[in-house]
Image 1 (cartoon, one colour):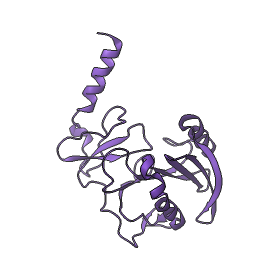
Image 2 (spheres, helix red, strand yellow):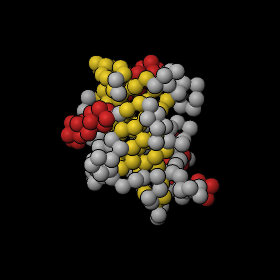
Image 3 (tube, helix red, strand yellow):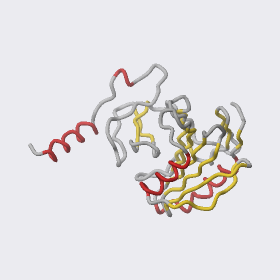
Image 4 (tube, one colour):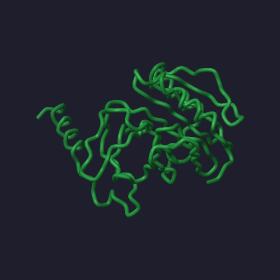
Length: 213
């Protein structure tokens, strides 16, 4: 068997792999599927696919209803340690703030198949798991994604840096003291990108630092 055939067989096996008992915690935490999945995952019965656009895996399979709230209603405000914001209407929130890299995943419901309309909010601390410096994050966007750094903007009264892949993704980096920062990443299919940019901009305007749950 050729090396290409071996690789194809391994990827096919990973795509249909069932989550192990160890992967299903009593708290119903998200269960990751092995390998890189550029297409939407086909999850086992009782699980659903949830986007993880800031990860090597495009999707993860999570127990249905676990870690994902209902779509945000008007006036809803979400708070985690040190940060609060108003989720855009119609987006649901998956809370993985207790992970090694604290992260919230927001995805627009009812957006159909294909690339999801999503916003990822992450707190990054250099020196910890997944912790690269802000300068390194900007450089990664430019070198890996072909992004360009855009004009700085103010978020919660502080100067934030931003990058953009036109028509595809926009990332905003907000310093949070002691070299830590928050990243806000908006991503959508070409045909939805401009139409939901306003949702992302309103979320940024609603951000308040220093808030506690």
